[in-house]
Amino acid sequence: MTGGGSGPSAAEVRPDAEYRIEDLAHASGATVRTIRAYQDRGLLPTPERRGRANVYRYTHLARLRQIADLLDRGYTLASIKELLEAWDAGRGLGGVLGLVAEVHGPWTDEEAGRITRAELDLRFGSTPDEAAVDEAVALGVLERVPGKEDEFLVPSPQELAVAAELYAAGVPLSAISGHLRELRGQVEHIASRFLEFTTEHVFARYLGHRPPTDADAAEAAVMVRRLRPLAQQTVDAELARAMRLFATRHLHHHLGSEEPLTDDQTPRPVPLPAETMRAVQDLVGAESVEAFVAAAVQREVQARTLDALAASHANDR
Image (cartoon, rainbow, N blue to C red; front, side, top):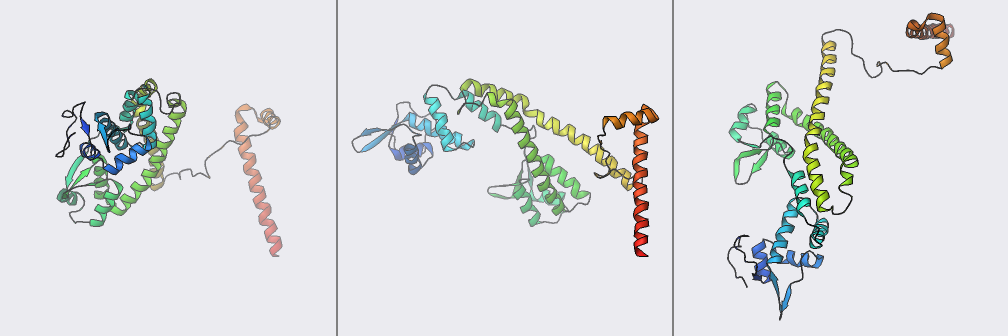
C-alpha cells in the first residue's frame, strides 16, 4: 500500500496501486469522512476487505476525482450518482461532460483583468471610498485577490469602464451601483426567458432522459455552441431600437417640441360594428371614414362636457 507524503499526481499513480482509506484521502484530497459518506451513498465501489482493513484501488481514486470535477461544475451528489450509474452501465460520459464544459465555458470573448487599489482610486476621483469598493465587491464588479489587499480581479473590464465613464459624467457611485442592481435583475429575467424558450423548442428533444444519452448530450453541446451568441445579438438589436426610440422622445421633450406620447395618449384601435362602418363609408366615402369617426367622437365629448357644465351651474343656482 502507499504510504504518506505528498499526494501523487495522475501520472505517478500506478493502475495496480492499493490504498488504505487514509492514503486514499491523502491522494484524492478528500477527507476520510467524505469517502465514507460517498460509500454510503453508493458513489464509490465497495472496497476489498482484507482482515480488518478495507483496501482501495486506483478505480476508487479515479472515481473520487470524477466526483470532485463534477461538484466543481455545479452538479449535486444526486445528479452525480445518476451520471456515474450511466457511466457504469456503459452509456459513457464524454457527451455529458462536453455539454457541461460548453455551458460552463465563457459566454463572452471579454477577458478578465486586474487593477490595483491606487489605479482604482485614480479612476474614481482619487479619494479612497471603502464603502464603494465593498459595494463593487458585493456586486461582483471587483473580486479580492487572496493575499493581495491592494489588488483586485476585474471579471468585466468593460463594465468597470462604463462605471468610470458615468462617474466622470457626474453620476454618484451609489446611483451607479443601484442602477446596476436594477439592470442585473432585468437582464437575468431576459436570460431566464431565453433559456426557457430554447429549452422548450430546441433542447427538450436532447434532454428527455436523465441523464441524457452520450449522443444526445453531444448534440446538445453543439446546439449550445450555435445558439450561445443569439441571446446577446437579440438583446443588442432590441436595446439599440429602444434607445433610439426613447432618446428621441426625451430629446423632443427637453427641447420643448411636441410632447411625447405617454401610455394614455398612445393611439389604439377600437372595433366598430360592420354595419356602422358601412353606413359611414356610404355617407362620406372610404377615404374619409377615419376622419369622420374621429370628428364624431370629438363632437360627442365636447357636447357632454357642455352638458355637464350647464348641469353644474343649474345645481349651483
